[in-house]
Amino acid sequence: MIEKPFRPEVEDRSYHRERQRPSGSDRAISRSSGELGRGPSASVRLGITGVELHREDCVRGMAELSAASIDIVVTSPPYNLGIRYSKFSDTADRTSYLRWCKTWVVEIARLLRPDGSFFLNVGAAPANPMFPHELALELRDLFVLQNTIHWIKSISIEEQNGETVSRGHFKPVNSQRFLNDCHEYIFHFTKTGRVELDRLALGVPYQDKTNIARWSHTGGRDRRCRGNTWFIPYETIQSRDKERPHPATFPVELAENCIRLHGVEKVTTMLDPFIGIGNSAIAAQQCGVPKFIGFEIDEKYLAEARRRIGER
Image 1 (cartoon, helix red, strand yellow):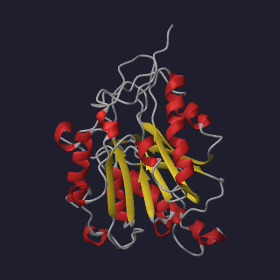
Image 2 (tube, one colour):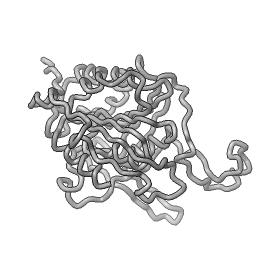
Image 3 (cartoon, rainbow, N blue to C red):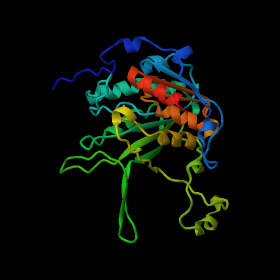
Image 4 (cartoon, rainbow, N blue to C red):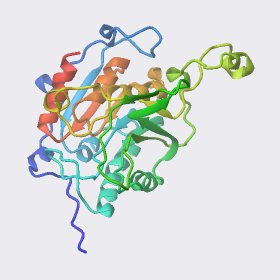
């Protein structure tokens, strides 16, 4: 079998030559996160987020940024699972795809500060379950896998009264061999594996309150680490074309959780090489991150990102 070469440079190569620099009309509108009305318990730093959105291949764009200039990266690249993007071919042989991933992750390694965090959201297909793990292994000479987080998109829980409660959304799998796939991975990479996190920024109350006094590390507070399973359902929508015009996005809350876990106060500059329709930028706004940089090759997705950022 002859493997076809992987060509992430889409059909129209002009998208890789043109860079829209962050000045004038090319800069997305930024607003104060203090206007968003979040509760006092959330880890939010009031301030204005300067948002720079570039229509450019991320490898070329990141090459122009200064080394050790980024505090946190939150991103979700194309998964190579045949998703129908409008400007990207999401089908390639595995070797070529992993090699391509290495090219942009090398740039992230150059840009990330020594105490920075790189959160990589990847999913899998039931027929290709090893893909996320293969990608993580491919990056082990550049980063240490410090945490593996499971993004739970849908879950069913049987209550004590015998009632089954289901929450969230998933895409049904029409197969007698495979289960419905209701989760994705968030790999938390760092350069050393020793980056301290704000674990209680996402903390939850103890179900058994006697644990507060039992464990000395609680300091008397009714708050514990949430753990590495995050239930974050998609918002219910009526029209994908109008409300979520992108085939593969993560919720704003997912990116916000990553920022808060790393520590809002430690983030000056955030990067997303595959910004899509702008959910990571919105999360940066809501957390009051001073500066956000994003890249996207599809002008329609980028226009939608600008529109959504400008509404906030």
